[in-house]
Image (cartoon, rainbow, N blue to C red; front, side, top):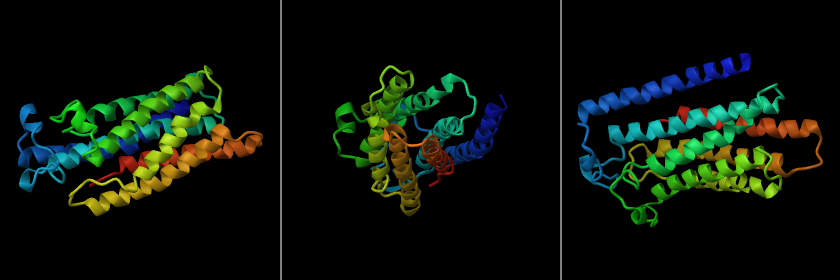
Length: 251
């Protein structure tokens, strides 16, 4: 109980200021940019020119920051759960499912709400969304697919339904691909693009470390218990850093 109380305290202390910041920005955007009706929102894409551009607007920034911070809370949550197991705390067995549960929530969220103009909530159709015309949208949807796929494979692994190392592939290789994509991820003509690129470069660097350490945990056999414990702690530590970075993300 003490461990979970500490976990909740960390989530509240780290996450609350970030969400308050996003909420304050949303209020400011409501004052300067009237809230659009759903039909109007569908026609205001981030490719519009001039003052109507979504990218860089108060509403667009608040939307993006919320998505990053929402993801950060869940990443931090399963990172702390993984750290608890790496340090051999006496945790309930079900906490091994915190990771796939959190990834499942994130994957579903990103597939639906990653971009305000994309399918299924925006004006773009399914074909237009996944046609590749907008790399930013495709990359966001990839992270949704990664989360959902890894959630399924990790649930199967952690329930003991499959023990072959190949079941770790989605978490390791899709995670590594997602890390590399962060180095080329762009928000178009966003006025704060340099800041965004710095955020993504830092996230990508730590994510590569997470992918490597998760691969060592899943596939390296014959090592001592102490060595395995170190790799597990490295994996959890990288995930926690990623979660904190996402919570502190700003544009």
